[in-house]
Length: 316
Image (tube, rainbow, N blue to C red):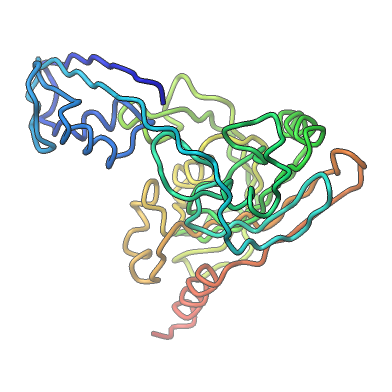
């Protein structure tokens, strides 16, 4: 991230808020830990005075946020055990594990999938993408499943076009609270960034982009929860989680949009959002061959499903 300075005037009618919470909601690309570090080092001031993370805003203050450039982290190969479903000279398909960030960003110093790809497929270093070589689409850190990796520039350019033209079919498996009234339905609601929390997406916005999600009920656990097959026609940030939560079907384990499923999350021991990119289908960008790949549902999701099934049977 290049060096930036933000200036904010706190509204006189603001409901009392901590400075760290205020900045989180204003600058979505900064993590809470990064903001805390900036406050501790004096890069965030209130009325030109240093502050603490717990400093309360009461209205009328002037906030200045100075963001120094982070040192560039060299993209070096890192050996990780990757679950490679398919590979040829042009592309690969992997089953991404939950908990692994897809590509580096200015706000994280973690090892990412890109670092592992550089070890597994050294040729991606030659692609015309210095920041996230090999990546043409992404999954959230805590979403597992099928991900296409490109290995040649020709394949990269073609797949970017195919994603833009919605020629890639993606099917997800989700465990959610509650049960829909219909066994098949569509959710067609625009999605945009929340004006109240810049790190979250919402359907309640005038500046959203079109988003279409197709949902099929595949298994029901009494009236408590269910398993869904979800196809996304568009690819908006957090689309499935936002759309399902808006329909009263929050994804179990979702710490951002799944507050309504908090009790069920705790009872089933879900440690992350129960969302898995189960299947991806597309035509090979070079040969034109029809391809379809499936990633096995991971153990943590299967364990939560078994617990839900036991509750349906009346077992403890």
